[in-house]
Length: 276
Image 1 (cartoon, rainbow, N blue to C red):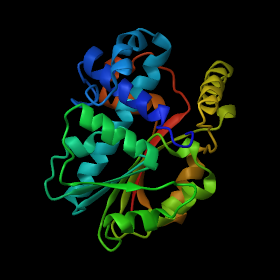
Image 2 (cartoon, rainbow, N blue to C red):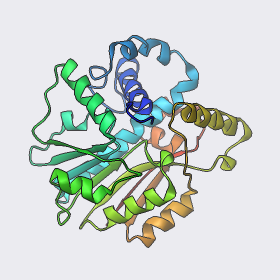
Image 3 (tube, helix red, strand yellow):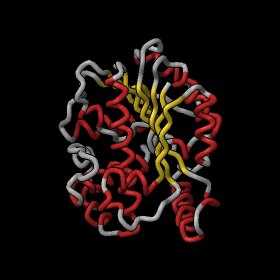
Image 4 (tube, one colour):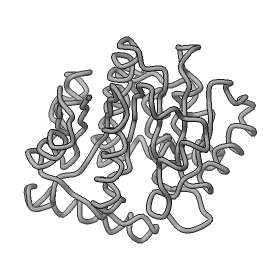
C-alpha cells in the first residue's frame, strides 16, 4: 500500500464478499456487514464487477478462504482459545459478527487502513464492538509482538490467528518472523493463504496472474513472496506446527459449494491452516 492511504486490496476483498451476498445468496459465506462497510462509490460498482466473468473465480476463492478460516477459528475457540488476531484485517467484519462474548478480537493493520476502517464504520452507523481492539502495526517496520502487547494481547494464552490476503505482499523474512511469533503462543492456531510460483501454472493462467501482479504493483502493493505447497508445509513443521491442511484455489471452493465451483480451473492461490 502507499503511505498514508488505505489498501485497495482490502476494499476489493470486501466488495467481493458483498457481491457474494447479493448474487450467490451467501451460499458459501454469510457476511451481512460486507456491503454496509463499503463506500458509496464501491457499492455502486458491485453489479458491474459481478458481471465480469474473469473475476468470478477470485471472488469465490476470497469468500471460501474466509469460510475456511472462520471454521478453523471456531475449532480453536472450542479448544479453549479466547483471543483472535486478524492480521492485515482490512475491512474484515468478523469482529462485528463475533458470536463469542468472551473472545477478544485484535485487528492488526497499517494505521492508515485502520483509520479508514474506523471512518467507514462511523459512516455506516456501526458501533465498535466492546470485544474489538485495534492494534496498528507496520508489518515491515515494527515488531508484531510489540504492537500486540501495546493492545493488551496476552502472549501466555492460546490464540487463533487469521492472516488472509497478506502474505504475497510481504517479504519472506517478515512471513517467517510472523510464523515464529505465532508458534511461540501456547496452543496457537493459524489460517492463511499464499500463492504458488507463476511457473507452476499453465501459460494461460501464468499470463493472468502476471497481469494481476502488475496491477497490484502499480497500486503500490507488489507481490513479493511465493511458496510451493511442500515447501510451506515443511516450514510450518519446522516451526512446530502440526495438523496441517492445505487446499488449492479450486478445492476450497468445491468444499463449500460444488455447484459454484464446477468448471473452475485451479489457480495459484491456496489456503492453509495449522496448529501447535
